[in-house]
Amino acid sequence: MGSKLHGIMAEFDTATELVDAARAVRDAGYTKTDAFSPFPLHEIDEALGIKRSILPYLIFAGGVTGLCAGIGLQVFVHVIEWPIIVGGRPHFSLPAFVPPAYELTILFAAFVAVFGMLFMNGLPSPYHPVFNVPRFALATREKFFLLIEAKDEKYDYSETRKFMEGLNAQEVFDVDE
Image (tube, rainbow, N blue to C red; front, side, top):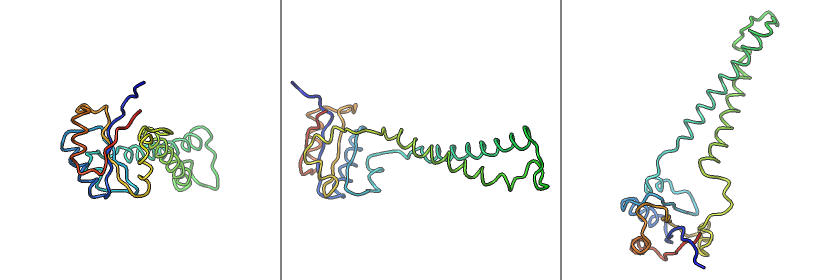
């Protein structure tokens, strides 16, 4: 019974080797790649050619929507539907409208941030094929890994494996589904 191959993964000893290999992979034209490190590497996004996320713009839009919803709700309630003068203030009292509108701004932005991050990262994902490689357990402690997925348009098993072995990797693994 043959297993389907998810991709090819290379193991590196240092962060510099990983970043250099990621640049070489990007320059070779591979696009379905991923890197794993025990700590954040700020240059890895640029090295793999990962574009900036649209999540900050979505969070801003969620915040603006919350602000508009907060002010809109208060205007509807206090000005249109039940116009009662309280404490001698006018029906549309902006200082009194600020705290609830602010709270809805934060609430909507937080919901968009959490659910947008979960959706855009494909979470929850309790299983990933890289966990089939026994040495991948070292990715949380001391080793660095670079993966080229079999879904990549340029992927050819023999050529990709030879390419990964030429990146000065400590070891190259086949990643089964």
